[in-house]
Length: 62
Image (tube, rainbow, N blue to C red; front, top):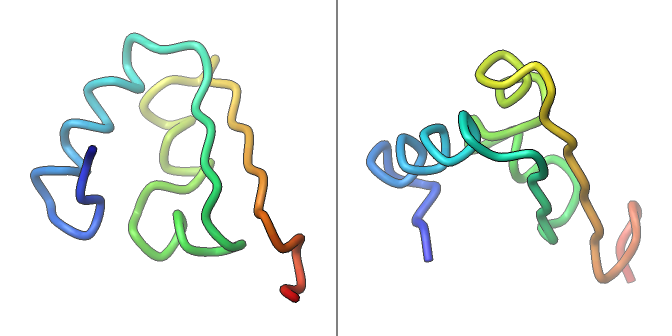
């Protein structure tokens, strides 16, 4: 598991993104962006990345 709230965790994710094809997250909308790990950030690291997101409660919550 990675702690994306810490710089060390984000750096590990960025290293993985450099050699990955797909990133999948299940946070509520906006959380990855708040942690500096949203699509715009990750596509700068790997322009070919496929970014998938699926929230258990949809875009607006329960």
